[in-house]
Length: 300
Image (cartoon, rainbow, N blue to C red; front, side, top):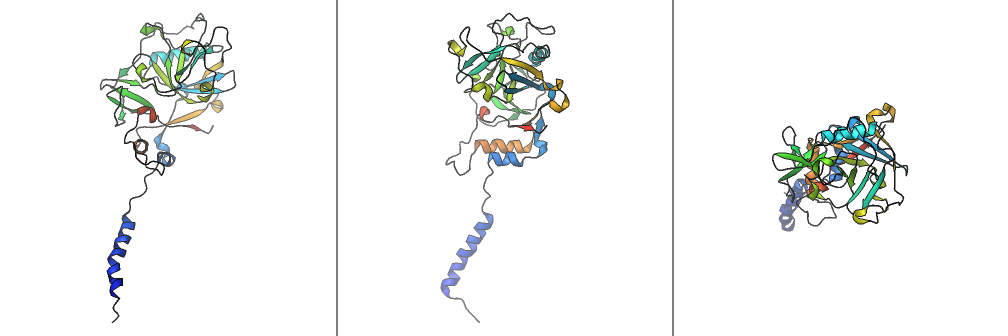
């Protein structure tokens, strides 16, 4: 019989322990990008053609906006009416305020509105939470009792009402002092740190999905609040179109990551608890504006 030397026998438990640890070592957490790349097709939700607003600028760039009729149905109907009447053609970008907004509309404020507009327009600053499937973000928020997602939209709620959050790229309706003066003829998009204090004071009607760099790169306005000086050259919108009005072959197609999918929950957790090689200490939280549902453009 061969007996192993004592020093070999004493090392065997350590060898077995190391082998067991190697077999049970936890898998490296997936990054949010990896989760997104592995998400099934069912985790993505198509933006309806009727809800895609295409703005063609005189620079040749196109800005694509997803409209949100579930949150501002009257304003969205007005925007569609303005678009189909050709009203947006020729209007200008009038305000480019650094770290805040880019705003466009009729600089003269005299262009007649087309038939079919609802004015005065109700102040659609919030809607009932009833009928919405809100997936709570699960982390603290400074402006609302709860934040989360409905489909592909960032949403805040007080438990009774729900509203779209004023995050980067979201589109709102310019208005005067009276709450019912924002018809949809003057719009802006957030291009800086999220001005969430505007929520429930202005109607949010959509989100820029593509082309926002064509707006953020514009020269800043030199007057108060970033307005362009009277008589100064202004970028113009040469054409506005609802995608549904184009021939099928010419329609762009976009999808939003759907908050109803299990993959979305994994993605949010990964966004809040970054554990890739760069991060020393995960935040353990994420702001709603840092969890904007990803967008992807689909092949024609």
